[in-house]
Length: 315
Image (cartoon, rainbow, N blue to C red):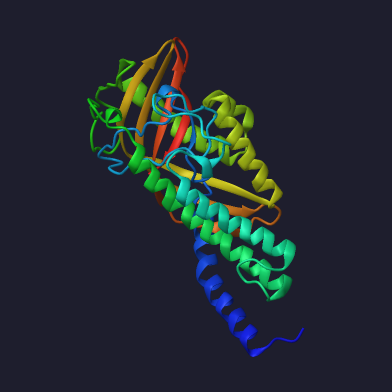
């Protein structure tokens, strides 16, 4: 294959950009190997599309859900036309930009053009890889912007912090208030259950014990965990999480909807998170050294039943 001087220059430019973009994508994937895949998944009942109040443990805004079974139905939020993230309300310009990048890359591969038209099939593949990296960055920025713009003020009104900044939340009581629901008191025994679930869910995930996960989380969350475990198997990988320790936790809000109780709590915890090659045990991502994560976990229970994990949101 004979390249002109101009073509060589463009190929070198692509290589430079990829050398900068691909490590970022790999770093994101490596850091997101723990349970939940580093995504915001699940449901918070009638508050699924409202941001949980910030706390001393998680002072920022929790990210909106990437994966949820709940359909938008709160006042002022209709179902997105056509479905999908790029059609989410308020995402017209940014969603169109991301979708346009993707469409250009796919059409470029089919017809030999696209962003890097004229360089042939191999350059189109490089162009598509670059565009995928750009889409990841655009989507993350767009999600953060959309959350800040559309989080209703009522979601933050009247919420009382739980036990506050301490090494764990084993002591103290707290209330979460909100319009359209009944405030719920969270007791020390509830906090103990939340801390226990944090460890047990991570252990069941590491053991790929789906039957155990069904006793600890809602069917929706187990469906996501199962999908992620299957993806690991397809890649011949296994994610091992150990030495999970709660460092700080506090209540964002707690409420009752009908027969179901909900509690959203901010958790900062340490863990050893590593991904191994399934057949050889070789370390492919993560580290033997402890790292920290801060997430908002929502727990739900039917009256008279035990708490189950209902959602995980990144911060």
